[in-house]
Length: 400
Image (cartoon, rainbow, N blue to C red; front, top):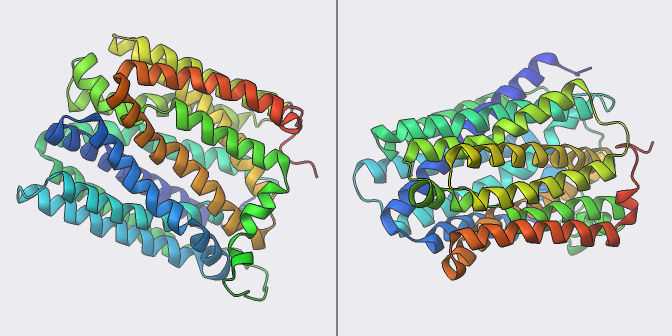
């Protein structure tokens, strides 16, 4: 059971508010950037400037999360994200926006998100018991995916009134999330000496993951599969140039994976995975790759949405398994640093994956880039099944 039901409600509400804000802003940034530049490479740069802060700051963020009040870190980061979005709103409303302004403010968003994303992952184990953690992760995923469904659609429709309106609404949602996180009552953490920020302590998360083949295999599988198969950065191009739709259509496309993910997370909330979790994870990632191939070849918005729904379902199965393994196999005093490494892998697969998609689309064209990504994901699945037999044979989420 939860240690404090009210705090768990605050946590889920903050998760929804922050995710709504992030998704709404993502639609506005993507459409505005492509509208200003008409460049796939520029869309890729949006992912790159978000990824760089995550890469550079991750080890320090993880160390800070293990030393300081995690609530303060998350709430402060969300407040900073709100300020960056307020600046985007003002520049847009004053018609001063251009590619460089967007990239600069997205870079600042990336700095704040590096602190928020990593530390947010460490809050949940202090709000629920260990027995309930897999179910709580699924409930958290359900709440998040609901917001991922609503956020892009809402952002797409609000964009009709102007990008500044979208950014202002997202700013208000981030401020709400920060207030709720600051009010959490967390389980008392064990009092452990605060070790100095040495190279050894900073790299302790990497060393721990390397010593755990199941964790290393699960995290790296997600990294390379989504890095190759992710086509999120290309959705504005697919929406406008292939499916012949507008910002509302982009919002629907961005929401489609979340529909599948929400369905999967609701299913897992009622029927948590208990057996053959390793084989299920590999099957889910293979499904992600196949759905990417179908999406790449589709010229129908209905088929594209269906492929993205299947993609989201498959991805959520993989996410819940990976997140559960990371949290259940990591001691609390290491959780911040291990989560930081996990966040780098996720950021690499998502934000850097957007840059990779934009770059390959600029080189080969948008359809070949997405198609190659799906095929690459299937190749990664086959290779990782050979490299990490311990993960293939993993039966349960918790061996204890």
